[in-house]
Image (tube, rainbow, N blue to C red; front, side):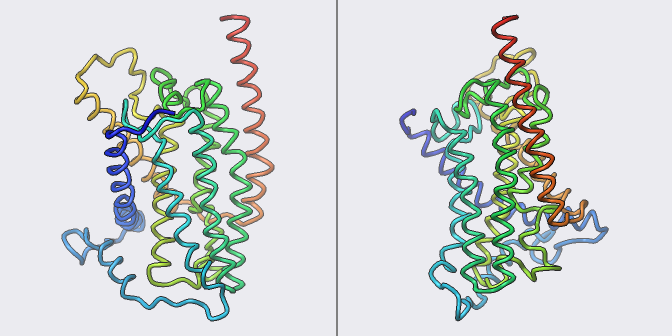
Length: 336
């Protein structure tokens, strides 16, 4: 593990600031994109082009009454919304945003990401249980079942990427894609990871944990004011984090396509600007895809979600990992 330097603190501060603000930007973008898809205007009253609408929403949530169920578990009910926000913020510690632009590089960064990413569901499950409501409880149970179902194929997809990098360091995972991105070398795992990222973020068509037509509001039915706002913030932060992880594991991170063949040498400042710009553009593209899919594909039934995870994605991800392992072993030991 590398020592934390002044640059690391600067990168951490900027990353946390951008991640917190990206949630507001994502909310505005979702309203605009959904309005375009549905042939309507979207926010256009608060500020120019409705740009201040997210700020107005925050003010509205702050002014609303904070209601806690009388028969609920008040302490856990209050703590639960903080958990998914904190876990989302923790992930930026090991994501490389450019050449040398990362908070820290640990030799088990991939395991750290998978572990932290799976902790967010505790906030949803505990919030549903502590509300003492059947709708909230069902939403929390669905979240736990969905997380278990899709964490396994996601882990296998990531493991198949480790076969190419030969390291659990996120820096090595990105550098192994300097010429060939994993989407070209490992397209099956890329599709599995993207689908699992949608499920982990509880986004349509996997938003069974909310399912307004069935569960009123799902796990956050009994939440109001900024407690509800924290869950709302966490959802969009996980969308952005999911977009970052898709970019990092399968789309070369901050590398341009086949950069080793045509990208000329450049100064450190220009290289830093290029790296951050490339990473940001890729992340924005996948954040847009999250929004696009939500307003295009209808919600699955719960049995379909479980069947897809256990009977389709998990066997395919395991089979894909085994085939790649055999091919890479054969290449290095028989043809290398």
